[in-house]
Image (tube, rainbow, N blue to C red; front, top):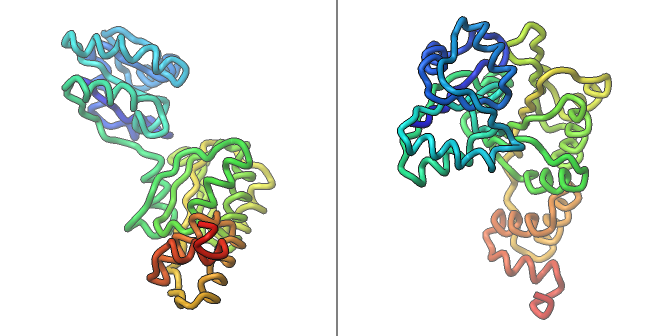
Length: 278
């Protein structure tokens, strides 16, 4: 059996009760950082009787076959990452996929989650949301990713490194608009927990002073889009408006066609000067 166990994102007291039991009884404990695992077990007063192996981004592909072999031999393998649930922007997906492919039972010890915690305290709509993980580090790739999300109606949750938070917020403001509501959740559940809420433009100015600690950013989805008239002038104006807001032309054409209730090919041909250029 493969057991994915959530670990505290801040306070060790938030550890699920089953975590200590699983750590003490697993045949193999695969940990993202064995030093952090040692600190966690010390804080929990647990002794790991099984074999401990490192399992992080750099060796995930190479180590998965050996862990799968242990699972197929009947071992109970426990996977823990530095904080939160394994495989959510952390190592784990490859091992889960391999276990499922070989009909190995996969279960989880539910517990702390930075995604859900940030979403819950953000004050933004929670009925529909999407998790976007970490944005690309390169400015161009980051801008393209955000442009593709400009029309996303669900609340969005991102992870970000503290030293890149200002740049990420600035890119969000450019792609989604300075007035888009958002929340920066810093050091969740820890002593210096802080949730800063406001329009993206204001949050950029706040982040310019420096951001420290673990960061989760929650951004409101796009407001309901107004319908677009189906005459050529209205269609062209709507595409141009979305492009001015940072939406890529391809996505703008699809969105305008949806809002106008016309085939996207018609909008494409109109934008590109007729069917001859399609």
